[in-house]
Image (cartoon, rainbow, N blue to C red; front, side, top):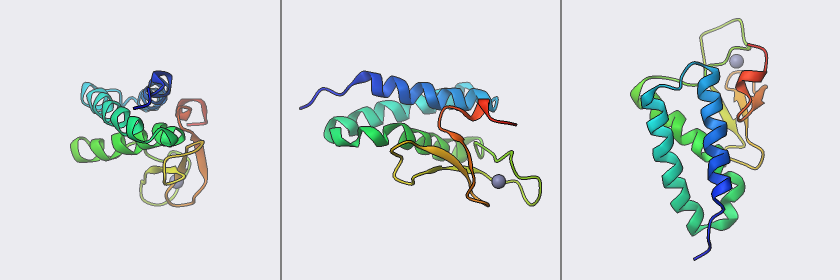
Length: 121
Ligand SMILES: [Zn+2]
């Protein structure tokens, strides 16, 4: 079995954590969901090393799903002023490469994964 580059998983964890913090969403529940998803993706990346480019985006999607079940939607779109509140989602859908958050209504890119806090908000 190949040794998975732990830096990859640290990077994925750091980026998703930054985006949780950017939206005041880094609660104990969210962080523990993040830890769970990172350890599951570690196993996944060990089975499929070529999947490295997708790990960060997939972890973000996993955390998004886990939070949806537990506490609600994250992250919300802050770009659109009209219409019902809605979420951002990860593009490309496969999780990578170069995952970005995209508005589910307009398809506009809100920020690269890990940089929700550095855009306008
Ligand atoms: Zn939007």
